[in-house]
Length: 397
Ligand SMILES: [Zn+2]
Image (cartoon, rainbow, N blue to C red; front, side, top):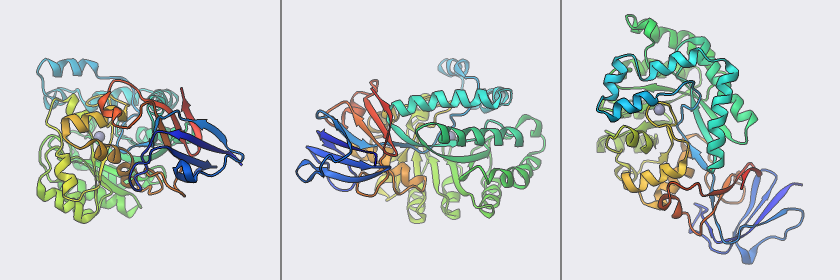
């Protein structure tokens, strides 16, 4: 039997009660069999003994919103935005999502795997154990399926759990600019049936210049017929009704929510729709942060994510996301850590993650600091001393 016995844990965040000092975690095969105080610790038996020397241990990060399989980059647009052009102006001039679509269509499946895997390794080395990956830079049947296959393969070959989301409704591609309905028909009639075997969810970008609430409803209803639950990019750049639609349809999540209202918050909380906040995007776009504390107080399940993408949030570190959520958005350090772990797990329908207790999946990070408050406090330092995924070392410094 393979196993680990982590001793000398200075501060253990379980999310199953108060933090424990002088703690021990026992892992057998893929599962946690003990998480508690040293005084009741099980014996070492056949397990590998690891002395954490006073370090903190937390659940592994669950990054519930990424677009990390893409080719090319948009550093030129970043520079244009810094000199005053808006995201909408850049998109209207042929930049934005569509410039990444051109680069991604031109890349091979092997190249896309190598590019995506390199980004995921950065995440694993930063303490991430589960993540979501969206398609959406293909916008044609062949490339969308290629992106989903690459995402699935990352989950099979790297020490990380991957949930996949079909995002054919990320933008209307150039070849359909004069035939929006034709593109939506392609999404509902051809792409969704083919993507259903490779995806766990279907997402739609509801925004001026992307898709309307009515178009999104058509797409999400078609997806539901094929067994794909919804996720919605909602209320990011303006208030457009995406959150209310997510609540109406019982989507798994409503994401971004920078412009969400209290009415949206109570509808999402009542419908059990998780709210995935991505402070890196607001930071990169220099726009106001989502009302995280308001959503939390309204009873929403709040998750945090990197939104890793080449246009508006090219970051891989959940530690930085937590710091932005605390410093810029106003969540407490404990709320942000919960949202980056347990909240993400609930958003992705994985209730055996994000919580360190007997019977849970052994996904955790050993933090090179005495408490997890050091994560937001020292945002430019990767504090993940080790990452354990499914009971195995995924990364160890
Ligand atoms: Zn996104």
